[in-house]
Amino acid sequence: MPYSRQNPSPRYDELLEEYKVMHSQGDSAQGITAEKMYAGHSLVRHVKMIKRFVDQHHSKTLLDYGSGKGVLYENHYEELDDRSVNEFWDVDVRCYDPAYLPFSSLPEGKFDGVICIDVLEHIPEEDIDWVVREIFEYAHHFVYIHLPTYFANKRLPSGENPHVTVKPYEWWSDKLEKVALEYPDVYSYVLIGEKKKI
Image 1 (cartoon, rainbow, N blue to C red):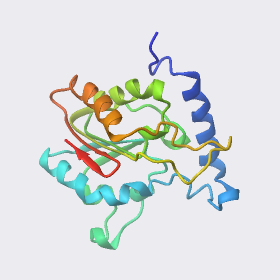
Image 2 (cartoon, helix red, strand yellow):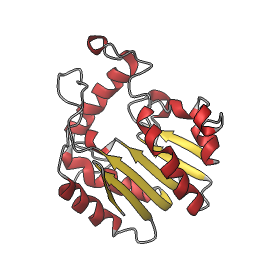
Image 3 (cartoon, helix red, strand yellow):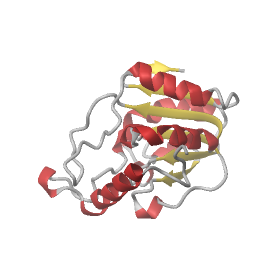
Image 4 (cartoon, rainbow, N blue to C red):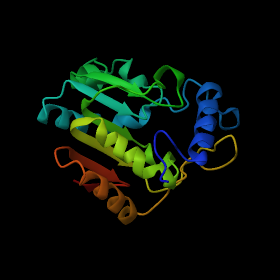
């Protein structure tokens, strides 16, 4: 039986518990406080690109799938004319991160757009298909995904690298395209490493 939201792999559950520890305790060995651990800063360099898709699709709602602590939605930034990211986009943002208690409940319904920044490489290979499918399921109009193809400089409490699925561009491209074809009405914009795939 393939793994799914209702039946994730044992590895998925194990990693989720490790991420919960990192969110709540940080990592003293690396000098990262709990507040700064997976705070959501990876989103910074994607903000203006995502704004283009929000405007193009006249979006009013957005799901940040794997948002971390979502700090960019709380603070105002000079480069965004002293607005928060969601104010700059002019959308209602719902954050979802199963390892961070305030955002751990599964979202309901659909959203105009779904963004997923630096998340999929943290998912065990055997769970990638159902997670990607779930991302597309939440989207009315577009999906924006970024994932690196290299190991992280952090460590899980177990000592393992948190990027548990590090694959080349071609592997990810094939995997994501197969799922995207199931959702022909959802526009997908994907950055794998530094390469773009539309």
